[in-house]
Length: 320
Image (cartoon, rainbow, N blue to C red):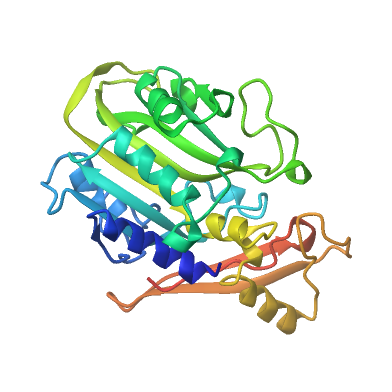
């Protein structure tokens, strides 16, 4: 399935579920506290934290993003890129955990002939907060997931907040088992024991609590929010390389042409696959520039360097 179809199926599915479909905003963040748009939820921050009333009870989008907070992972894993697109669905005081979890399961595992993705439900793993009995019950009693595929994590590993007093809540992260050729089997309550076998596809954030003062994740939960929210993000490129049976995000149909162009310009051959043929180590350098059509201003010009044995020959920025 081509990336463009994966993107369209996302929008069509959530439109059919009563969501307002919103366009991707500029890579320059509309939220003044953030320089770049780093996640699909950025345009919806005022509605999520409750400083503005949401114009709609539910929304969905596919947002272009620039990676900043974990940019050091680019070139080290098969799933991180400086530019990526995040599929999202959002609820502002409308549906909560039950609705979000059921939407995720239905779209991920539903029949492709019905406009869904058709992934194997037996290969799904989910991480939840260790105290989130509501999410666990929806997963096991409604969906029928194997409890052995549900990993309970402490707050330090499975809880969202803004870094200051305000809304906070647990996550429900969906992982797909790509098989033993990509890494060791999950044991002891861990879905990332090494390698890229258990690929995180989609994170559901349940904005449920008001948090107090504190550093890191060491803060009190003061009570539940009067209006809860749902904020989710699924990596479009991650869905694509699973559904296109590619070993990494760089070989999907929308990204590989950049690598092909780099091959042609450099005269070097890209080593296909995470365990591709060994070649003489070389470094490919290219300049990637991003522009904002709304400001007609140059946003960034960064020198991208990568080694072929690590797979990343080229990454890309995209016009907002």
